Length: 321
Image 1 (cartoon, rainbow, N blue to C red):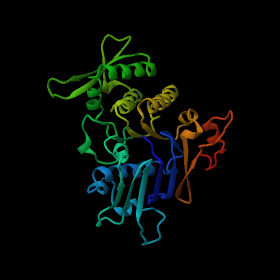
Image 2 (cartoon, helix red, strand yellow):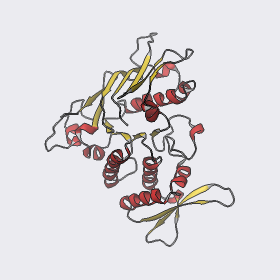
Image 3 (cartoon, rainbow, N blue to C red):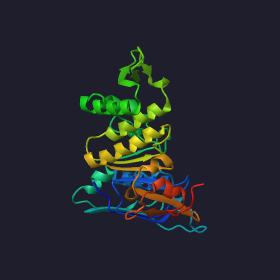
Image 4 (cartoon, rainbow, N blue to C red):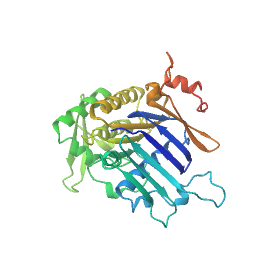
């Protein structure tokens, strides 16, 4: 699964943003309010346009809310988003709320279907971006991870997947021994139990830390489907200690190679940025309210790590404070 180009015009702070030949594992990093979420919004809108074109806009707000903040008073143009793969593309225009979307699709090899169809997920744990109750089943995590129990219950029924998830969790959380999903006899609702090495009784999912729940949720998103997926994760570092963040980056990179995933992260964590290579990095920053990016496909930092280059402003784009 590959993406050749992304071009976004007039969407929120993305006035004329182009990404060329991004790595299947990419980290978009920058300060708060630099435009990382806007980029992920545009890609999620593209997925909705592909899957539910007649309903796509209602999940994201009105045309005026989506149009670039750089417009002149009373002047609106067209929002255009284009996603290209090696043998196909999706391009669509949003003109206003009352007119149907102008959509072009070339997908003879089903590359767009594989990229933006059922393989697409966006995760921002604990932060509901848009109302997606219609997607709240056990197939994939929705953005805030609130259907974790359903997804995890399905995943743990596969002995192979369960073994991999628990093995990673034991590496990240040494005391963890096992996970179980049980059903409440009175309400019929499923709930999570966690077993630890030095405890004779399990802990309810309601009693464990946010970091442990986030670790379980992130692993569930990575393993939620066996086929290649296009997975966007915002601020995966929330609630995690530096060791887990580093190992999470390694796991994402491994799964991209092993399962042909595309995994893109949005982060402002120095620890996470310190673990990535220049070709995996895209710096996002703002100039006069417009989101800009920098790619580093041929950058040689010698012995300097990406976070050091970022915080010293070697990469340009301003110092993040």
